[in-house]
Picture (cartoon, rainbow, N blue to C red):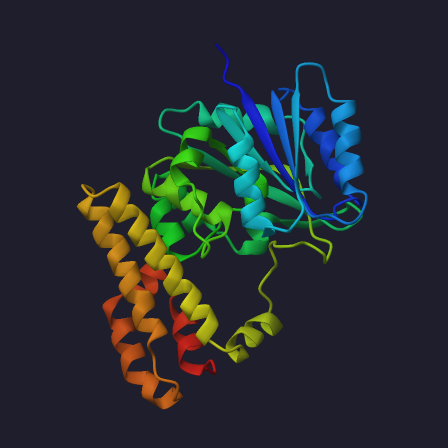
Length: 323
């Protein structure tokens, strides 16, 4: 019996591009069985567009509309949408992108591979009018051959312990993974958390295909942006306290969940404990920059900056950022 496929599409004041996205989902070469549309307290015509879509949905496609009277935020809204799906496979969907006609078919094919739990892909970057910018999502994020190769070899965990390269708008996952990963910790964004859980279970997959037109228009709630000299300088000038507290909370939540649910996996527990130690050390640096130098150099010598962070970029950040 064929596996059922659901789409979890989240909206918030998305009237400008929503109809185009819904049309691209409807016109897939492999039709989806269910679409859950979860609206996060929109005040424009988004809700009306969702109702219009349900009224004209393809035969055989179940459409569920959820309304949040008070906004849950991106992660909370996606968790609600994913919980409401019933398919064996769930594709995450943003309100302002456009899917290639064969996206569902391609991702379902990857998840048919033995052990696959979540797959993410590259995407074509387009502007607000839908015109290609000439860039790709992986290019914008600076994802290179080293990281892609590691994922393809099954070492996605090592990549994600340094930084996230998985964008939810490109993701398809098995419902079994979603159920195991919920509830999503407040310290994590939904796509990062799901990808990390898949990697720790050996089920993370990547495709280099561009199956989504990923729209960057200046009003994205969250999204990708290329690191420029100006933005890099801005990071060095930004206060460090809140960011490092967030990184520490993420590492703690990850370690606690894994230790509770996989107590027998001592090797991965040790790896996550080392990641947690790295973030504890970074979060505890003195406010005075000169006093940071010795502990930063000790942490650099331990190898944890390279293994669990951005290497020399994070070293520089920790040495010069204000409190």
